[in-house]
Image (cartoon, rainbow, N blue to C red; front, side, top):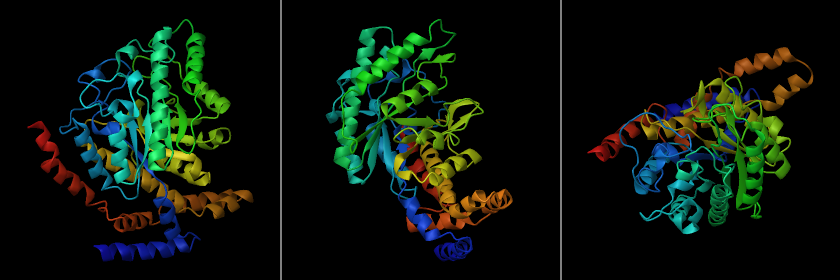
Amino acid sequence: MDKTIEQAYALAREQYAQLGVDAEKALEQLAGIPISLHCWQGDDVGGFERAGAELSGGGIQATGNYPGKARTLEELRKDLDKALSLIPGRHRLNLHACYLDNGGRFVDRDQIELRHFQSWIDWAKERRMGMDFNPTFFSHPKAADGFTLSHPDKAIRQFWIEHGIRCRRIGAEMGRQLGSATVTNVWIPDGFKDIPADRTAPRERLKESLDALFAERLDPRCNLDAVESKLFGIGAESYTVGSHEFYLGYAVSRQKLLCLDAGHFHPTEVISDKISSVLAFVPGLLLHVSRPVRWDSDHVVILDDELRAVAREIVRSGRLDRIHIGLDFFDASINRIAAWVIGSRNLLKALLTALLEPADTLRQFEGRFDYTARLAWMEMLKTMPWPAVWEYYCLKNNVPSERRWLEEVRRYETDVLSKRNS
């Protein structure tokens, strides 16, 4: 099988060379693009603060009851290790604050400290991984009425400001210890279920809260701040305080990273079209790659047209150093490890096809208004033998091929996951 993969790759490499594309260089570039795997896929966005904490407040919901979800930190880390062993390349971990290691003793969010995340940092250090971090502004009694940083009660706002301040400091220490800047991303669920009488005041309060949260200057070599918008959510169908327009203005005026989540816009909008525009005005982008189905349902990423368009825009921008890529979906209806693997491998495939484009040739066609050739070549590229290059990349990274990785997941399900329900 290995010899067949190598032979297919040799033929594919020759075909790409005829178009002026160096397949070896494309693979080297792909190896340098880390994907931040989201911890919350492994346990249905539950976290490990205390039993039942996920039931109150915030509009986060995973659907499905597939057996074998992680119930402890140890189980989640073991599942992440298994997923990472099936994904080629070196990647990152995206951690939410509610996944703290509190030793079984409840610690409220305005009291979290570095020590509650040191075991995660040590885990990542052993694997030579970077980490990203998220304050958790949901699943908490002080988020149960649908507002956090924009809450009319100053005391509740201050509680969440303190949580965000502590998370930024923790994120900076993660980045310092791991030698790779942590992207600390702020997303809140604040909004109204029905039509509001006052759209202005909550946004003014949010602006003031964010300014207080970000007041402390942190070393950008250790921590990068991002803000994330959303169109609507469960319980916030009519009005979201942190809209795209709000956070775009905030990110530009405060020079923060802007997070574009694939599911946080109108059904006819796509984030691929926003990347080049936003990059012209902010220091960097955080992309949450997801798959909305009619609404922000966060389905597992598939290799569809929009995913490939996002990958093309990332590569064509020439600004990979300013773009941070993470996954954000949570499907409890299928094997959770398979969900990680499917989503990650599809995103990497999309990036590979983008890296295998003869970008200079396409730009030359466009520059001389030869739109016929541009369209013809773009269509031709769709049938180029990129799968042979992908299989070779998996082989080089000692991970199973497309036809083999599911066997590994099934074996793990039998040996490990199935025993969690006995």
